Length: 105
Figure 1 (tube, rainbow, N blue to C red):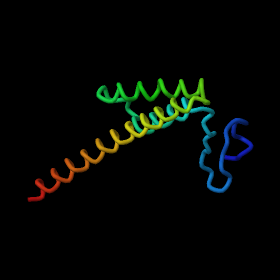
Figure 2: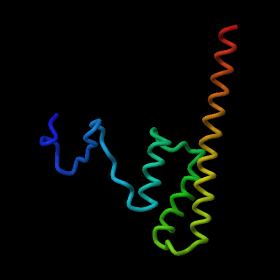
Figure 3: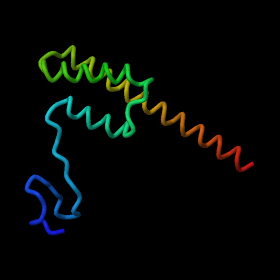
Figure 4: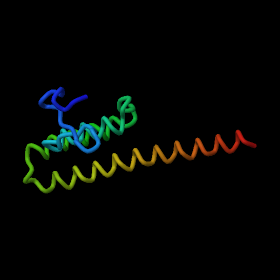
């Protein structure tokens, strides 16, 4: 593929020809990218309440960026979401290790 053949809005890193992504314009867009990366198959039902809180706070922070109380709540909700996801991944890792150990015995 020649660079001249690419659409004009298609940004590439010329060194390694990997697609560059445009930085998010606001917290809502950044959160949407994060959620799409963390939950590629969709948000599990049990995570929906915290995800909805974080989304609502992202919109609120974008609308009122001068409100420091909203920022504190948004950061805390993001931390809660991250710890929920991390805890779930670690739990899955423990289950897989246990299954592999019992299977090899």
